[in-house]
Length: 115
Image 1 (tube, rainbow, N blue to C red):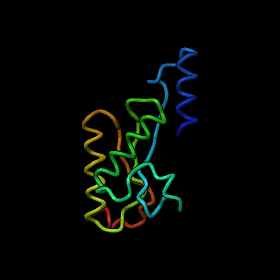
Image 2: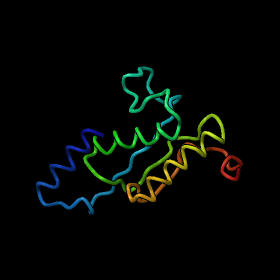
Image 3: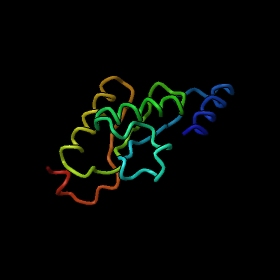
Image 4: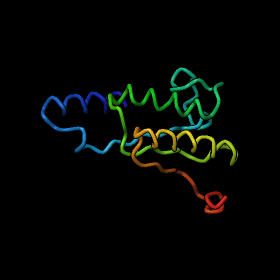
């Protein structure tokens, strides 16, 4: 993300408007993170909702953008309740205009989506 942020700034300096770029990022649950806690962009002891918000704030800093075109939940979480909590945080970011579109990746069960 940091390198993408640098590229966005460099392109802006060349006259390329942010609106012409498509930027997507994601929230990755702790179980999907690298093994070192130092690389996790949120407090793993925080609530799921706060983890999503902290992660997105770090993405904004890295990308140097007030919004993204697409924000994904990297995968369903270990329970439906936690997944819905994470999704509600994504929806809040969407309602604030900080994430124009929302999605979920690595979801292999249509039954999960119908819950």
